[in-house]
Length: 379
Image (cartoon, rainbow, N blue to C red):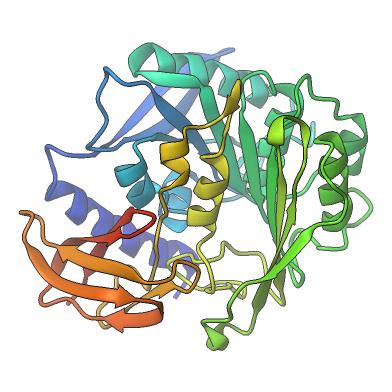
């Protein structure tokens, strides 16, 4: 089955899920004219959003030939936003000569995507209560390239960025001189056939990219190296996390090296191009972002939250959850009317469970850290 058809199936399931919560979270398609072009975007508002409290804003940027709906489904931050209370915006690029949506970060047209995204921050802040000290950008492939452009040229507005399978043009990396240091997370597979891990005539090698941002953030050049537990041996990959600490203002740089991984988003709901399923890129990116703001670190309360890796989700069979790094944890499953339908006490490591019937549920963790995740049981 082709990727677009699979994503369309998930889109239908998402619509069904949203229709059951008409008075809860919402996704709205909007547009405005910027420099003579109509630019469109989707914005996700979690149910717990309250206009009296400014919330973070997360840009989630699609890759070349993709679009904002596919990115929303493939790299799905919505269950995290439901508990962490942030707004997600999924902008669209503009069509190239072949009709594929693209970001103009290679300078091949006159389209001002940086200006559009900068204006989009203001547009959303004019309509919603946004904490402008906590605006973040992540993206897949060209969306990752675009996030680096934001870090270089809009560092006074972007608190931190994360790139999955994207890098930078070597020329842009050499010219990048942000007005403030920007924490960076990079996630990349060593077998990426689209954006090569070792770089090419135009693209910076991934390790060179990471080293450059370690230097820009004045981090320690020797990282803490952590092997991610290989909880899914069937994905043919493993992952290693490199943590560079001690940067300016407490900044860090993080690098997830996906050994054998392809051009894909770890923990995605579908496995394409050799996808690592040992961790959730969405969860790790938000953990990283939640530490930072333009004027210092984020709230201590936020850093005590975790976003459990439940997979597969949705599922027609068992759900798996990884608690390896959390010690003993109590897990509770709630239905949509707030009743506990299952409870697992003092759990640790990797375990699995199945829900009593089809529908949407909420998984809640209680212990030294807290967290929650929306899960869907399919027929």
